[in-house]
Amino acid sequence: LIENWFSERYSENLQLSFRVKDQLLSIKTDYQRIDLFETYDFGKLLSIDGTVQLTEKDEYIYHEMITMVPFYFNKRPKSALIIGGGDGGAAKRLVDLNFERIVNVEIDRNVVDVSKKYFPEIAKSFDNNRVELIIGDGIKYMKNSNEKFDRIIIDSTDPVGPAEGLFSKDFYKNVSDHLSDGGIVVTQSGSPYYQPEALSMANKGMKSIFNNVLTYIAFIPTYPSGLWSFTMGSNKDMSIRDEKKSFGKYFNEDVLNGCFKLPEFVKKLI
Ligand code: AG3
Image 1 (tube, protein in one colour):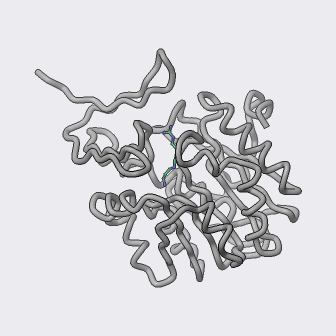
Image 2 (cartoon, rainbow, N blue to C red):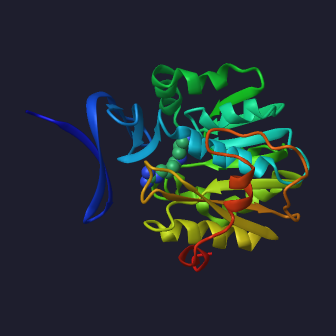
């Protein structure tokens, strides 16, 4: 009996394996390798360069947390820029949160095409008339545009390869120039357990540019260690506004209030 498995390697000695029914796609693009699997436990799974990006079953956790947490801070935001996020999962949540203008800059057209084909429920956000999809380099886009946004969401891969620059101080300076008054940037900042340098890099970079920086965590079963971090920054104070909170499948008001309570080893990284 032959069984097929997809594994993401976390270290020399540890990997997470998903038993798969089928491999639906494997392509090498100008930027990265993209694989698509039909798994037993998590539905379709998209991986980039061997790392899990999203699965049908648990994508809601990451996408709710990267959009809904910063949404409830400060004045109600109306415009957002997403860097990365070519699957459309972040854009979808912003549409649901009634953002009026959403610009999504994804470097690799293939990520969008693959998502449209295999995750149509998620990628349909790109058909919404409030969403503008731009295929291009987020770093260049920031340099050439002078539009300001209420939220900037950096939905990147790990800080190796094409996404490395998205964790740098220079990039955060550009981000800062594109935030409206009281605007907030948020980035995924890796697994505090397996990628402590990603969290430290995001924090250090943001603290050198922004007056206020906050880190929060979520449980994401298909990412390294399951414990995932996000880091947000602003030049203004950040506080949760008084408004009735809606909830998702993971996000609710308790999660919003609790996700900033960090374990000691995580605090030491920031
Ligand atoms: N963005 C990337 C999460 C990084 C996952 N890293 C890993 N598995 N080593 C998620 C893309 C979803 N829009």
